[in-house]
Image 1 (tube, rainbow, N blue to C red):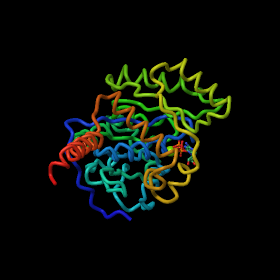
Image 2: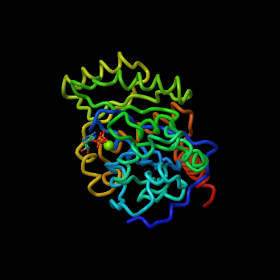
Image 3: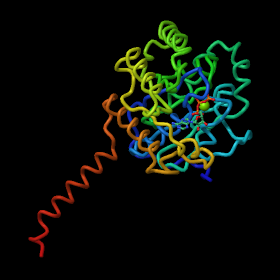
Image 4: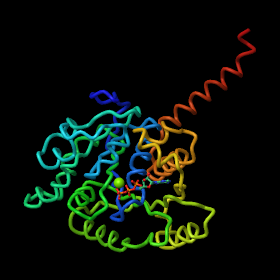
Length: 295
Ligand code: ATP
Ligand code: MG
């Protein structure tokens, strides 16, 4: 079990990017993506925060935290106005922290309804954390409720996972028009970070057909990386681990690392891990070159 003090973080970024993982359709891979993308970004040595905005608290459990109702959570941040930094906990992955959810969050929809700044609670709470984390990922519930609206108002970009199945595009026009309305009225700088094909099985013609449909609908906004259907991804949460710790060599782990690299490239962010790796190789090469002269 993680202890209760957050990991020490590497170099603080100037301004972290907030990405909301959203799709009002249930079971499309939002939580799996939020957990494993966050872990993959942390593996690149980028300080990352996973914010669980879903009363189901699956992201919280998926990074090894037990379901406890007595600790500070996203609910207390949104409803009681406690500082987000005070509710953040470490995870088994170095450089990855989590703001846990609790079941009380179900009530937040009603409790916030009468508040004037109800859509901006999360945005205001996360603003001070942008200088601590390079990426902040928001795992949203499967509905377009006030919790999701808070995530849309807090985010810079939306990441929309879509399952490779026949009804993949169902409900997507509602999501896109919600995005347009949020941009027009509440968060003008919100953009579509990308659409991610999940549970992809290249052997089936249906998966391929869905991929083609999404490509023609979303163009460049469809990530080149797709996430394969992989049993390791489904097993990892029951061990309280992201897949890169549960089975680092699995296809699921590789796919989420590839997605992390694609997102870094799209955002022009250099991976400190890649930079360190390149520097190590360079110094090794130099060692080999001079080695005969050292004898
Ligand atoms: P909800 O809408 O309930 O929050 P969700 O969109 O967060 O669901 P997940 O919980 O991530 O979806 O995934 C739904 C189920 O599918 C889970 O049991 C998960 O383990 C499984 N799953 C997700 N992605 C994959 C994958 N690529 N391969 C195999 N199983 C997967
Ligand atoms: Mg979920």
